[in-house]
Image 1: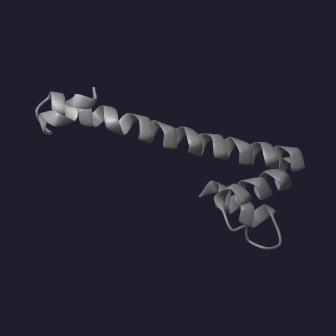
Image 2: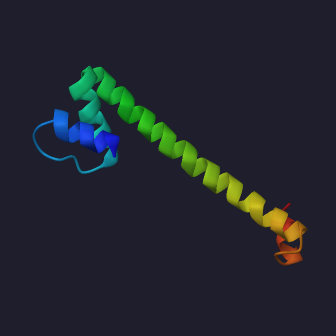
Length: 79
């Protein structure tokens, strides 16, 4: 919300298509071109980290639920 507000106050021109483009445009408008690319890279790294946490944590949860008897015991075979 704050980034969108900042973008609407600072940046001019066409509206970016993606969130990363929005961050790059706002960063470039506020801090210069290099900072805009750095902020876009930081957003990409944060999204990738969140995705990895979900992908790696999900199966562990299913195995733990099978150990507690909430899922069929065949799921524990993967442990």
